[in-house]
Image (cartoon, rainbow, N blue to C red; front, top):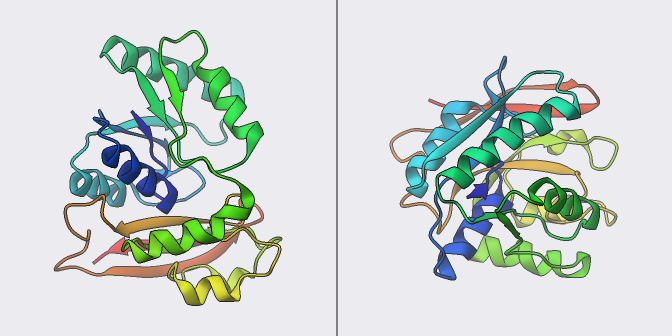
Length: 221
């Protein structure tokens, strides 16, 4: 099972897993159950369903209330993990890059479950500039759906994740957004059978600031 945020790092992890010969049983995504959007990334559910279809992997949804206390999050995730193990899942992969505390939390969540954690693209802070360029060379296409304006300019929200965007990041920002600077929606790349929006367009809608973060809404039209 792959923890799927809808962003470029999850997509690149799927590519890495398949390159290694792993069989991916599904894409596990947490949704805000009232808004029907990916938690934090704020991506519409129908866009994630399109990703799963293009990736050729079932979407496994975990719906969360909003707000979601950590105890409720862990209870719902624990139930999902138990169902996965009953279905024969042996490993769960994550697209984390270098945040040790995040990795340790995921390892604790799976401890004793019978499912082992995997971190196929685990790296180091000094290696993420090269990773960003590698993803772009491979054909990753993504857009910025959420930005932390305390770390990078809010006006970058809604932009394409490309070399021009990287050139406008402040030097303190990680080019993969690993420190929470930004979140993305991936719409094309080698992990998909085809770009998601052949015959349709991905349209940027309203940009707003809520809860200290700036979000751009995207929809297929």
